[in-house]
Length: 262
Image (tube, rainbow, N blue to C red; front, side, top):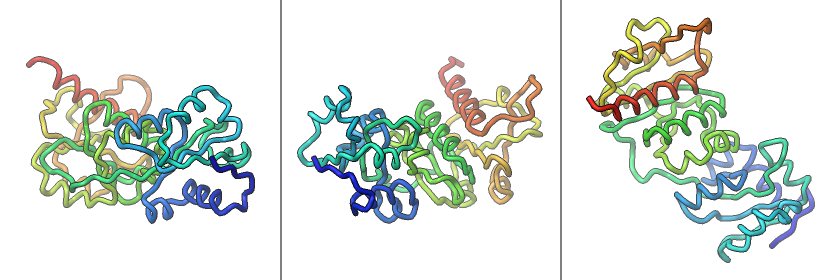
């Protein structure tokens, strides 16, 4: 184990940069996972981390110390002073353990013949992460993100997704009109003024759900590529749903229909 106690240390500065800079994550193809759950999910679906980073107090925790005993000799382990580790942490109460990992890349391009979830300009990392989590849980393996979305490999998005990244084929900076123009299935977006309701549709495969930004919704050029709009019935007094909640409703209505005998 290597111990670091100074903010001037080059290795700590590199970790800090990886934590804060989307440009650095894109350039290096690496991300920082915060917490045991994310690390274990990465190991389960992808493989070994490049580096384990623990806090001085984290080393004394039973779960972390047991995990460190099984770390491969090929994986370096860095121990940071608690205040340095807190500088990298996503949450107020640091987990005590992080990992530097290589971002998994889809070995193939997107597929216009299978289910997909399209995120158009969703800027909040919590919302992006929550939708990724719902997509993975509902069996929608393919996710496309437009430019303007929150950084999909940022620590906040990773934490919100709770390991869903490693179960999905994620494509960034996608041209949605081009994808939808050649899509072989049904493309649907939600709209408050749509005449059809979600529960009146027959959600057959393949299916592409499109969800737009929190404030502006789906861009006009994307909406023009979709010929089916639906609304989620809301008998209560609320005017709308959070985009992550709306996505969860739509994705799991798809699951319900496909699991219900016809």
